Image (cartoon, rainbow, N blue to C red):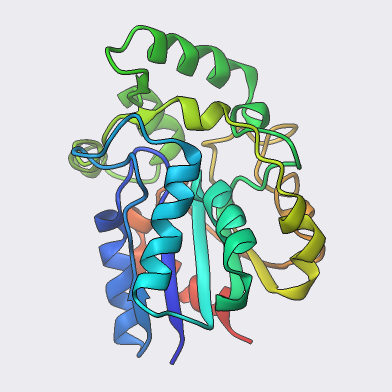
Length: 243
């Protein structure tokens, strides 16, 4: 039995992992799906990136977990990289699923294509609390294009606004890169994931290549295959997480 901690991405909360977590639990594993600080419909939208990291560290330490397989999706990649810096002895393997692996000193927005930077800055500036609400058109066409319209609409209702300032915070990640070779690491790549446009700004090999020889696991599906095909994603997580 392995222990998995699944860290969600932007606009999500921990509950959206439940279909995947159920599959992993059915396979005999222990699974935790904490909600990152600042996320969820009732989250404190003034939370910083440091708060986000601390919330996951506290969830792991508070539950007395060790030898964990820590997975981050999308924005969650920036969180698990920092969590690894804080509690490396508790982590057995890192899994980045179509997740940001920022270059040292970069923010998430430094790693995003210009059209997202401009759009998100505008949405944050025109919101009452400097948050970004994902437009449905982007969700439908670039995040969950493999879903029916009905599923796209019902899952869109689960999303919440995203604090913008943590996306701008520079992340030194010196300890992360200095000790990365000391931990198991995998990258899961959805071959139809267009949340980042393929090519210059794509997930793979741009992000995966920064993990210094990480195990690459690929699967068909969009950025939200956790919602469109949780059984397959759970299988690929097990493939990425095994010794």
